[in-house]
Length: 213
Image (tube, rainbow, N blue to C red; front, side):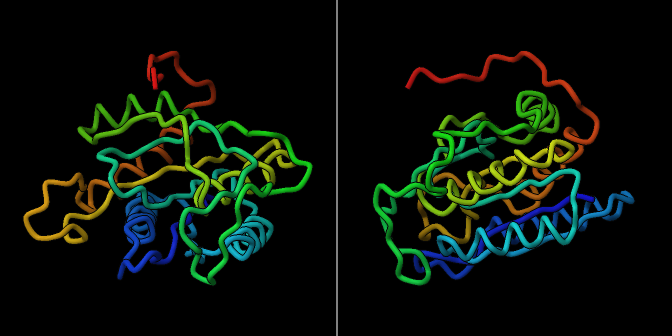
């Protein structure tokens, strides 16, 4: 069983491409005979964590890929690390704006994704889809849910998971804007590539994908 999650719209946006992309990715994977469930998470600190952990308990997935929007990025970002810090630049959809608070009080400073992110990056490039390994998932609800996910999986050694960010859709940008975007079908296929890679790759590959800043 594969669990895919995306977020509801936030920050005044009418859509969130992460949710649209995982729905479509679920259709693609389902057509290949892969059991998939998709869950939309509220863009709310705490509440999103509850929805995610309840879904994990209900579905008992083998792989969990959570996704969110990173407007301004040009590639699908395979997030490497989640940090135990909520520091919201803008309020969430319930008006909460935690500053310098721990996601889980007393939890580890950070968790690493246990998806084969380097192999997934290689396979994204082979498929002609722009991808990157990201060293920061931010400190908003995306990082919040990434940290909660990896904390939950720490007690579920048979389950692997991680987080990916997707760019804006072209239609979300102002008319004539040169800002980065990606077609929905490319996002969906990218998420499907990540899932397929995780299904068939136990040990990640060695591939340079670091950053100097």
